[in-house]
Picture 1 (cartoon, rainbow, N blue to C red):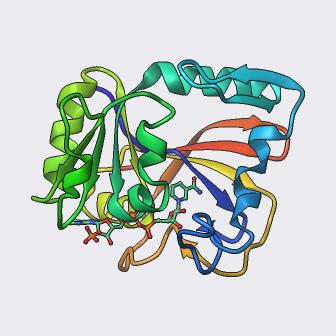
Picture 2: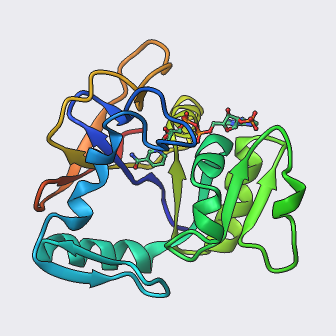
Length: 204
Ligand SMILES: NC(=O)c1ccc[n+]([C@@H]2O[C@H](COP(=O)([O-])OP(=O)(O)OC[C@H]3O[C@@H](n4cnc5c(N)ncnc54)[C@H](OP(=O)(O)O)[C@@H]3O)[C@@H](O)[C@H]2O)c1
């Protein structure tokens, strides 16, 4: 069985997007800085199955390759789905995506769609994602989904792409967690260009 883990770019002050996210600026004001590291290095990483070519450090390229190989499914919240317009039709990782929502957008329901809209809750979405992921990992996002996973004790690993910027506002990743410390064990640190990839195991 794979892990349930995050994989989000985050500012040093803990935001995964800047203020005022919306159709014009899906990552909010200044939030595009969180993704600048995809073009911050000198090693090309062509994303398989897409026409995207990232330019990153060699270590980051290896990490992106590994992430692609070990991710079997994704669970995302409806806001991210809507803001990205369904990642233009298919998530770049090219795996099934389970979108947690209170409603189903019928225009996205068609034979062979990579998206499944889950209206009976996060745990149901995670179960369905784990079933298709098999021994691979399930990636979860964005903030509201990660917070629900943590509160329910369902998150195994926190992976962050830490970006050296203070956004000052926006969508905060570790919000609404309730009281009480949650212990983490750092398991990996990868220095990239304009980013530090950090991985922590959630101690249960
Ligand atoms: N930095 C990064 O790497 C990164 C990556 C992805 C996204 N983002 C950013 O993250 C932000 C979006 O995150 P977010 O936390 O605001 O929203 P989100 O998690 O993407 O979506 C939240 C929505 O999902 C639905 N939902 C969540 N839990 C549910 C449940 N248990 N049952 C039914 N529906 C549920 C609700 O939508 P409905 O009730 O309307 O259906 C809710 O409003 C955006 O700014 C985006 O740009 C950043």
